[in-house]
Image (cartoon, rainbow, N blue to C red; front, side, top):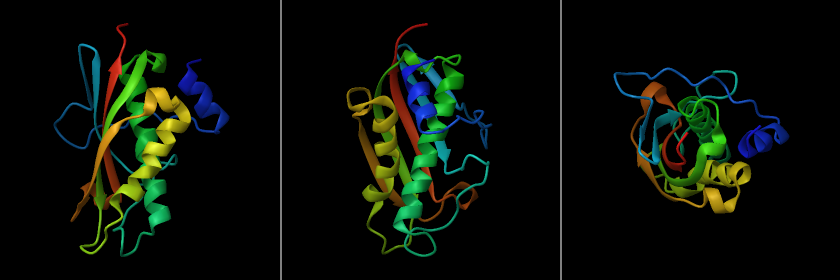
Length: 157
């Protein structure tokens, strides 16, 4: 069991199967030592899309939970990409986040902390300390509250 799988188990989280892409694009791409994960929308462990607009019908806390579910989706996609071996992840390099937000909402970074904090929780600060962006968007696919992409450095199989 990988270190990440162990941390997830201790939190009572079983990664879902990697979702199918919602369009004509690669769900992930491995290029040398890098794993790129396409944007993952906020889908809970039961498969329900967490929808709505921050600053209107979604609270900051619900947004953080939505971002956390994006991070879980990212790890599920990474696990599929790496043949089930999350120990191949050497470092989370970047998260890029879009928050479905009302025009006057300005707490995008606080929302995305839900994903960043989760990654640190399951990977440890050394592996998960990353750069990121967090921007507001007028809408997202399926009216998802949050969408996040990731870049990891990995070791060869």
